[in-house]
Image (tube, rainbow over all chains, first blue to last red; front, top):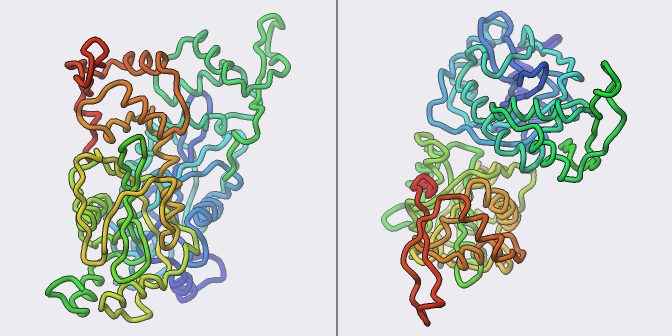
Amino acid sequence: MPEGQSSLDLLEIWESLMPSLSIDCVVFGFHDGQLKVLALKLKNTEQYALPGGFVRKDESVNEAAHRVLRDRTGLTDIFLEQFYVFGERERGDQRVHQEVFRANGVEIPDDHWLFQRFVSLGYYALVDFSKVRSTPDWLSESCDWHDHRDLPPMILDHNAIVTKALETLRLMLDHKLVGFNLLPEKFTMGELQQLYETILDKELVRSNFQRKMLSLGIFERLEKKMTGAANKAPYLYRVELNTLRNKD
Amino acid sequence: MPEGQSSLDLLEIWESLMPSLSIDCVVFGFHDGQLKVLALKLKNTEQYALPGGFVRKDESVNEAAHRVLRDRTGLTDIFLEQFYVFGERERGDQRVHQEVFRANGVEIPDDHWLFQRFVSLGYYALVDFSKVRSTPDWLSESCDWHDHRDLPPMILDHNAIVTKALETLRLMLDHKLVGFNLLPEKFTMGELQQLYETILDKELVRSNFQRKMLSLGIFERLEKKMTGAANKAPYLYRVELNTLRNKD
């Protein structure tokens, strides 16, 4: 139970939520050539889940998504967008919620809407892996990165939610140039290409990729990245248009 | 009121719905160089609205969208996809629902969730204008096409929903080649170009457009379209891959 709160306090909190609705966030990070996803290990259980939560009656769904992500992982000020509504009639065993709350000392009546069917609004987030120090909440033992191809089985349809988020990321990669949100501020063309190759899961031709990217006219060329011999050091780039680093 | 039903029957129906959720459909059609949108005139009122409805507890949200569109417009078997969740705290005056039901002889208690805030799942549909004989339901006086730039003011945030749907259509036009759903089965390259120009609201260079389209390798060239002199008649095409005509 959260410090200083009782089951009754929690029931009151649930009264302030919109019934039938939840939010689940797929947080992507890129590191060491791997596309990673953030998953919570739920405290005192063997269950894993995406960071998720509910919508308060006094906030918009997009505000709710930002708050939920902040409360459950400590992440703020990041690219976060709706991508799909998960509204199948059966999304898996809803009783898992009862198990998780009970294991953490919270008793909720069996007939509460929390244990009925609800529809989940899927959001995906793109974060610069190097900047993340995620903090698990009172219901979570840990909040860790997993390779997207090697995720633990998660509750309900959460693994399917990740699959759909990845489809969306692939579709949006070129169109809205969202990929930059996964890189540090300064990067080489080689690092950018590795990011694209990992997300698209295919090799790209170096010269074509660089020509296409540079023709977009959105990169500012900076100093060389000094790692070895100066004559072979690649240039660093950054995105010139602030508008592309979508923070909302 | 629907024939043979009482207010009590209707209340029972509302008990079978998921609270806090609605569905609104933006139906696009293309005709005479205009991109059109279907709007309902609500019976015995001066209000216009998008075809919309609610989600039953025993159906998925996507099933609900197809049913709602069929019930309210008579349209079946068409391209219909989620595009955004409209979940602002204030989406306009919810009392308009009370006005509409009262004007049609249905009395619903003021404290019903129908008059509270709900979140609307936005779907967009693309239909071949020539095939549509839409049929208004018991709450609607008519169900008519309007140029998308000249829509009547609609209830709640429905005009904003159309704007967002149009943004999505533009984004998806190339990526998922959804545009074909707006054309008859056989079309000329000129007709296809006119469709793209209307949706994107800009002129395209004829030779570039045709080269790009034909390079996709998805068109089957058919007979010439005979309208005037045979030597000037353009070829008709159709999409070869059935998979592109997404019916779900």
